[in-house]
Every structure is written in C-alpha cells, then in structure tokens.
Length: 172
Image 1 (tube, rainbow, N blue to C red):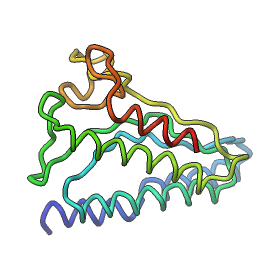
Image 2 (cartoon, one colour):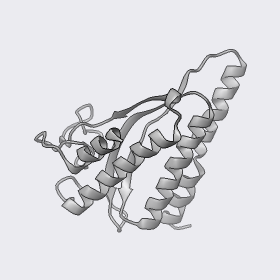
Image 3 (cartoon, one colour):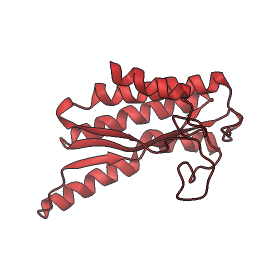
C-alpha cells in the first residue's frame, strides 16, 4: 500500500476516536462520570484533492461520532499546516497567498462543520493551539511545529488569511 492510500484509509476509519468512545463506555459502566469528549486537531491542508477530501470526510465523521455520545464536545487544539502535492510540508516563509487562502477556507469549513454537526447544548468550545507562526523551541508558541504556518497571526503578529476564516465562521 502506498503512503497516500495508507493516509486515506487511516483517516476515514477514525479508529482512535472509536476506541476512545468504547473506553468511555467501559469506564462509565464502572461508575466513572465523564462529561465531555474532545479532539486535538493538529491538522494540515492537503494540496492533493483526494487526500483533502478524505480528511474532510474524517472530520465530519469525527464530529458525528462525538456528538452521538451526548457529551460536551470540544476542539481543544486546532492548528493547521500545509502539505504540498509532493506530500511535504510547506514552511511558513514559503506559503503563497493562494495557499494561505486555501487554509483560510479550510479553517472556516471546519468551524462551520463543528457548529452544524454538534448540537448547541453539546458545544464546549474551540481553542486555537498556536497563536502565531513564531519560530522557536519546544514550549514556545508554534515551536512544536517550527517553521510551519500554524498560527492565525504571522511571527510579527500581523493577521493572516486564516484569521479571517475564523472570524467568518464565528459570525455565522
């Protein structure tokens, strides 16, 4: 199986989330009270349309699975990189305006899907992980994905296109 086929299969299956949901059920059978379920969404926009579509399907399915638990649903760590058609990450200093706009649209799509799929009474919030594209070491903002365009502001605190994606989604 080639790498892109593996990515497609693993993405669509949501195996880790399904396993977590099963564990929650087991823990609750033992009397443990669990109020919510969350997802760390350290994701990337994929220039390969087939992979991007599989990621979108997986995101929709994950929101549906989490909502079906009846628990509070939170996106606890949303950030996004960019993967070119060659399968390699594009650095923050190499992304084009067009790529930044694609990421903007993907952020907006994700947030809108959260609000569309997760019932209002279960929505527990969305947290952006990296505020800016700071270079840095582990522990610094953006440092765990150094050099990637993961923030909603650039390294000089100028708003990026993805900031607009957040705002547009929240205004609906």
